[in-house]
Image (cartoon, rainbow, N blue to C red; front, top):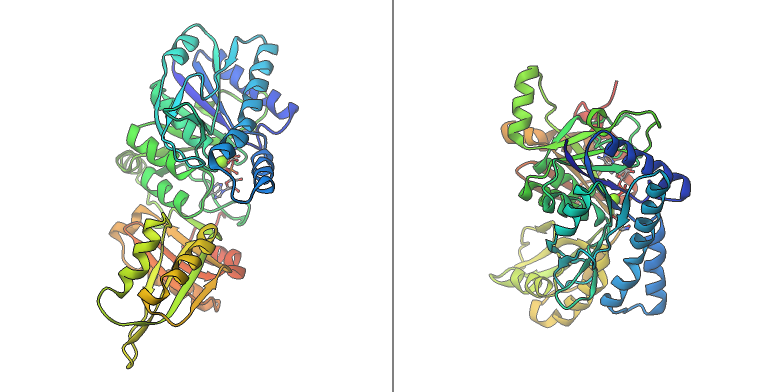
Length: 422
Ligand code: ADP
Ligand code: ASP
Ligand code: MG
């Protein structure tokens, strides 16, 4: 017998028929002899709808009240799934975030889980009851409702799995695993049998929304076994132990497996695209020590995450241009802050561009192989795609390009690294 946390995303929970299908998958898992807890998302589109109501109420809404509103989508689906399970003859009940409780910090709309009280869950599961937990929700120390940021139900699921010391956390979604790139963009994307925590962390943070970034770092820290798999499976499909989803594994596990099979892994594991960044250029900044600090200090204080940075070579006048990227959602605030600091920084003009995309290639194989970046630059150049900025980490190379060329760039790179399915 194993203890398994199952998480179902928005598409899987969208409507009566789909929730009934989810209930049957959960029932089969329990019938296979396991203790089961389920974490659910709101129905697809519901969180967007609720966010819109908040914006309509007041563009500068109170984030604490935003959380009260948007957390409700998951309350609905958790109650409904418990009902569907009961209709199948299972013992089931819902446990809302405040009932467990799931304690978080007070960063409304992007709260971090601090602790989950697992006593009630463990007792419920031990009694053969299926615990249904709405994802995305938490509670501050002074008992206000919080949410965990978009896509946060993944993190709820991993946190519950860590709290109840689950043997596995199965993330059921609308694709049957993690692919070499978004299978909705590249038809030739291949499903990966496994991907390392580090690779998944990088892929998630550069735009593969299949798992929320925080869920991956939490799983890595807590040693939770995570599997990504499809909820759109036949009714007579076997329980998840034998469904080939994608396992997130440690690098040691991966190496062990590769040695066993004596096979070579691709140099690049996956490619991701992110259209949510904006590019900002400040022109004619004095080329003197401390100039750059006057730009990024105020942005850091305002909690604005700067990603790629380029400082152009100074021309003869002792002036230079600085270009960097920020999340599009923070662009207006960035521009306002830079205007405020114009005299201190001493630049000539701000040029902002939201029509950019960041394309990233990720793979642990990069650690031991040179030439990954070169292949990327050449493949893009051959198709006339201009690179506006570059950044790298140990297992990732990212470039900034024109947003209109996103799909083309991803396809070209997918082919260049030999990732296309036969
Ligand atoms: P859920 O509602 O189940 O949480 P999401 O929409 O958050 O589902 O995540 C699943 C989606 O992630 C897929 O439909 C797919 O379009 C997208 N995706 C992006 N990159 C990848 C990838 N590398 N592998 C699989 N899916 C990906
Ligand atoms: N419902 C939330 C969202 O759409 C959380 C989630 O589905 O993971 O972001
Ligand atoms: Mg998601």
